[in-house]
Amino acid sequence: MTASRYGHVFAALKDGCPSAWAAYTQHPFVTGLGDGTLPRAAFLHYLVQDYVFLVHFARAWSLGVVKAETLDEMKICASTVNALVNHEMALHVKTCAAEGIDEEKLFGAKEEVANLAYTRFVMDSGLQGDFLDLIAALAPCCFGYGEIGLTLAVNAAPDTPYADWIATYANDDYQQVMIAVGQMLDAAVIRRLGPDYRQNPRWARLQTRFTVATELEAGFWDMGLRGA
Image (cartoon, rainbow, N blue to C red; front, side, top):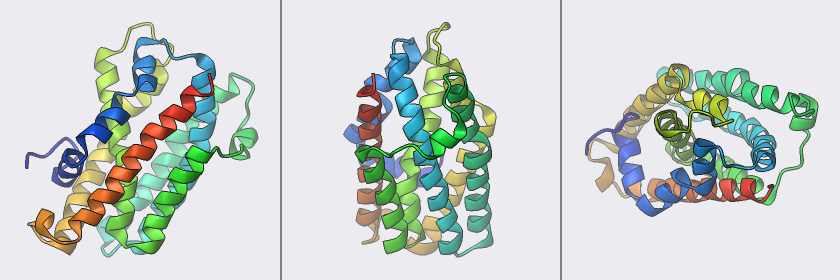
């Protein structure tokens, strides 16, 4: 298996659900970000819900510190929480503030069903399972946004109003965090399942968690479009 930018394990998981991955990373919401045709109302609706999502996502990564078996795993999970809380969420606050939506309103926004389904699936994966179950459920969001950011940075229309969003996920800071997460995931899987991890009986369960989370990502974009 040839490693992707984010490692061998991610490449294998992505190869295990090609249709779901394409539906997520090539969704009309994503193409609308790139060509600038996404309605502003849809983007803001998504952004508010994504802020709420990131609150729960940060909590799930914090659970990774508890579930970790090595110091490196703890460090990566902790640094990812920092990147989410102190950097990625800042884009949401900045953009929504310009539209008259302050951070208090963002934090208190009512979660939509698609948001509830996704965040609780991720948390349940970590609470019910072990470190690998949790990371498999977290991975589609992390690596998917990294891929989408890089693709749109190359192909987006020069006048798209969503250039700041694209830059957040295409920039070197985000990409380096994702590369580190990918390296950590490779090491974590080999540590627990061995070098022939795809032959391990546990692999099918990890693939299922990754695939379901990927499908929930596409559902999140659907939710965003309904806000137009």
